Length: 398
Ligand SMILES: [Fe+2]
Image (cartoon, rainbow, N blue to C red; front, side, top):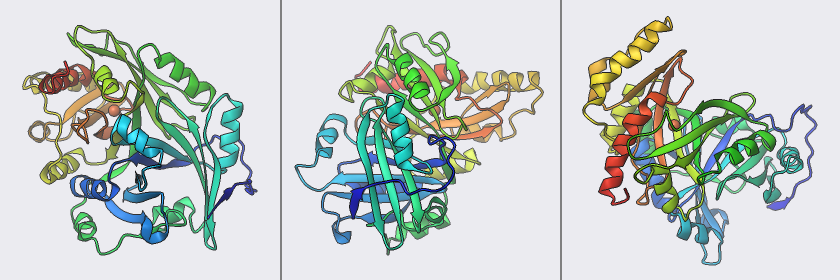
């Protein structure tokens, strides 16, 4: 059931843009039924719920995949006249919506419009006798959207976190053996650590200002292209964070290099339209998670052999200088698993990047764990870019 929403929330909301959580990340995919199995098999997601013809949904099929506090919603159009088809033609499979839970979706939406944001879609409420979910969307960079989501009754956030129904119109996905297997062989992914967008050259500062003015975000860290350049390609990146630091959204733009940057490669395979480049998924145990993901067949970027000749000195020196203990994970295991390490004045982090999740070189995942460090692996960017350029060369895109 769908109707225009009127806000009925009586809770005392100081700031309508106070973000409670990343409600879900919606992907548009060509075949949600098959994509669900890919993310379940390789990354250990639970295929938890579905909304499709069997539940009366005749326009799209939607699969809710869960792991820890990560909720991915895979959406596929069911009919040729659905406008999602056009996006699939232009962009392939990828992220459409980074949706944010708020106390009152309509109030957040109206605040953002007052702040100069542009509507993607007006508030809609889905309700039944158990509760309701209200959603309203605004346009972010390129094809990306932020939905605001507010939840009542059985669909409240704490309920869906513990396995409750996502929204009216969803049913539990039952008799799926991979769900039991994944429970017994967890990948340990807990929540979305950050979400990176690629925008066109010269547009980074525009979108930084947009996140400040429209969403009430603030700048978190800043790298310039001197930090992040290899011999051939470069990028510039600024990190925007919500007021409570709940969500961090780095924004990349290509910077001129001798060869084609990976940001430009993304844009060229994404109809020159900005979009989400990667989702970083947080684990408490990088080694265990990466070992399990590799065992399942996840294809990670491999590093130049020289990486581990330099990394321990670089990282442990930074840690000692700032009064932190050295990297506690077994150095040989880190190397065997091909994990990257970086440190800043607050501590260190372990991270690893998958290859693209679809045939087009667009969206990928990062698997990250933090031991104090709140940055994004700046020291790895050079090593990483060299590895990425090797991949680009294989694809004939350098
Ligand atoms: Fe990242």
